[in-house]
Image (tube, rainbow, N blue to C red):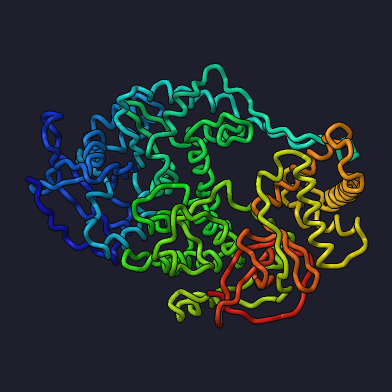
Length: 608
């Protein structure tokens, strides 16, 4: 019967970790036997060890291993990984039979013992304080190892060889640019094409899908574990491959559009594998690194929701971010997410985190945790979905927006991580909102034109404007996401793009007025549907999932689907776009980002 192992305390000042040292097994049927050794990550050089990246699987299914004479129970996947990777001979065999033979000699230490770090055993999982302290060391644990061994499983289905061969073929065929945007004849007519290039005949789609559907690719902790060490070897059964090769294959699949359904027929699992390529260490200095990581963490699975923050810490190098987040498994989840959001604001000097905070989808009914979650905090356990509004892209220079938020953590901490104090400009109060613009509004061109007409009638009634074409252009300017469209087209010259874009709006305004004045006469046969298709694409990029709104002082805008009359449109210091807030007592609740076309008076506000 499994007993309880008594862990000796780790020396935090010396950045100590535990490693497993295993004895040779006489038989595969024997219980694994080994011992625990403490090593310091501050030593120069650090004692050689291998770090293992794997998934726990169902932690209720257990197996027994013997550590220092005590039989302890561990998750079955932990025992399987150790059984396959603890043996120096087995590790050397896998490495020597691949292009990584040079690592084989380093895998076995000078004393003939193979030291392995594996979280389920090397961290006392019952000690929440130790778990939090060790989480802060994960960057060093994986980066200072001789190599990281990614254990995908024993491969009972036999997919390793054909899947790895397909991965090699994807990298061999190179990365091609396959994104054709829009061809324009100068009259506003164009066609958008997302091309999906066929996979090379030597690439087996089914095996690629089987590989990227393995549980390891969806776990949040494995993201940092795979990229923190230059020698990361992926092992499936008896086959192995360098992780960088898999990343190149993912980039190749993404450029062929097999990670999404824009052209139909996406390969299951590739989307998450492609997301992993965005977490490389060469982007560590990006000021938006924290916010970008928090935005993507909900796509990955975690048993403990706090790990959607802590699982990303190893990918962030600055001490300030670590000190603000300060891992703890005893803090309320709302505080963990609030700390991470503030860390993102401080690091970037921008309020981009607030744009992410509202642009998520709550799966299932609201629970008690949600009720105490600050409206401005990024909810890392919520998910993005196709039903959500498309994002608003900045129309201001980031350097002009950037602000020193270094004092913000102390101010927020005084409120118990509930209140975010910000300065801003009051733009106007919303007096009218449209229904939410949905995909159904773009089901055909007539539906789309009728939707724009309804917004025009709403605006003309509220504003009493007599200039039809000018109002139509304002509405289109607000609904179309110009900045994203510029990126989509790949146009680098700002003046050239804006001249082209405004010409499009003029042409669209004349076309819409002509259609409305004719009461849709001969619409199906006579309307220039190629031109309407361009308008459809432009509106899809900015209006889908949003609500058109009008303020008391004549501002037009598009906001979140939860925006209501009475809400306030504000420009906040550090914000690249305006935000919609709702007054609740002495505080303001964040509703979300928006696009608005005018500015007004200075005010001071606090958001809760």
